[in-house]
Amino acid sequence: MTNTAKTRLRTAGAAGIALASALFLGGCGTAPFLTEATPTPTSGSSGEITSIENDLANGSTQRTLAAGNISLAVNYWSDLAMDQWTAGANKPLNLSLIATLAGDEGQRIYLSKVTVVAAVTGPDGSLAAPASLVDEAGVAPGYQVKSPYSYSQSFVLPPLDPAATSISLAITYELLLQTTPTSAEYAKQTATDLLTIAIAPAE
Image (cartoon, rainbow, N blue to C red; front, side, top):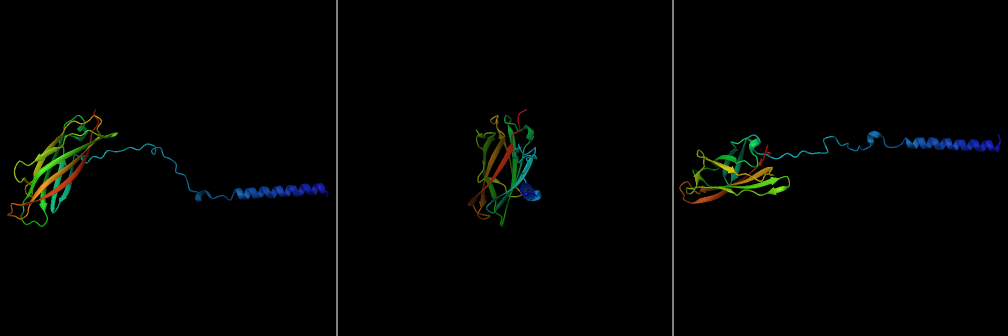
């Protein structure tokens, strides 16, 4: 074999080895099942629907509030259907409550004042809110609310900004508890609650 032929054979052999090495190394990457997959967006992931909280979605709701050792069982409801709670409507909110006392020794419980403070929200944030609604007892020291007595009232929320999407109501109950069953002295207790109600779009 001539020197030229030997040179060509060595060159071909080296190229073959280099090609085999390249194929081997090319196949030594991380196995597909060990590779961390990149999440693929689903058709529904690009747009999220934001629901509006509505504590009266079922037409009514019940709460148990604490004021010291007084417990208030409160019911809220509306005579107006939720799909008619539009910004331009007068919106009635009814409530009733009854109080019980832990460690009851026969003291009476009186409700002296109820205050409803509204906050209105629209798509871009806060909007102008109506004036506070207040029911202050016309008798001293207040309305008896200890079981079996109870309190009922209806507050009417006036028309709101047309852009309103929800209204939040901070409700404060001011209570007077007799210090003893025969005493003319009272301890003041306060219970608070928060309702958020959706405003239906006008048709």
